Length: 278
Image 1 (cartoon, rainbow, N blue to C red):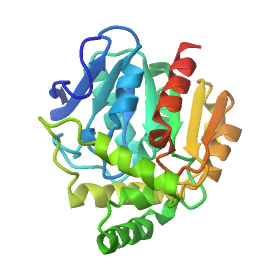
Image 2 (tube, helix red, strand yellow):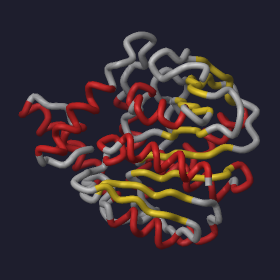
Image 3 (cartoon, rainbow, N blue to C red):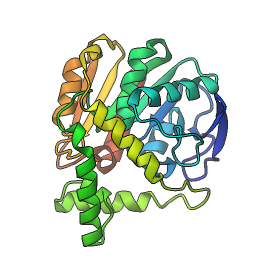
């Protein structure tokens, strides 16, 4: 083990003239697991337990795509362009083969990479995400506005409404998750800008009106995970991914929402390690 999420240095790499920031955690060799993050997310929004859990056996790379956090450039308004930037980042690190872990919006990006650059990818983990044209995906704008309004009215964090169920167990998990996000205390990413968030919303809305037919060509092993009550990317989309992907396995966590992998971080990390090792 070379480092952990809490003390990993933030580095920068030139990607076609634009500086993208990243962190590397865990092992220094082997096929890396590249994390692709969600709407509004920067490096600090990854759960340290999942990062360190996977880094116990793997090289883990976290990065801010174009226009996100401290990375330069302007955030694209399509998932396809985000995928192109992610592939350019991977190649800028001289990586010829990677595993992809895409959460939410990152899961959309991972699907495009797998379809357009199959030789670059070994295995894929898709969490809290869905296929192009999936049920309810295009509703992200109003959903986000409603969550921010509820959060302001109740003195809570929007993720308590977006990522977790409103049950006692769900809200306790939300509190634990938000505390874990504060464990790293130095060298912190700035929040995503309004321009970035609006571009990401546009990309998600377009994805929600897309066509998932090409998913049937993805031959990679895929682990699909979600909570059973996801309000952001309705859980039915995880079942649809598992149905459409020829080589997929599905994990659904009970009394859990969009952030089910964070609520059940220990179980999910164990499942992910088993999947990657198979």
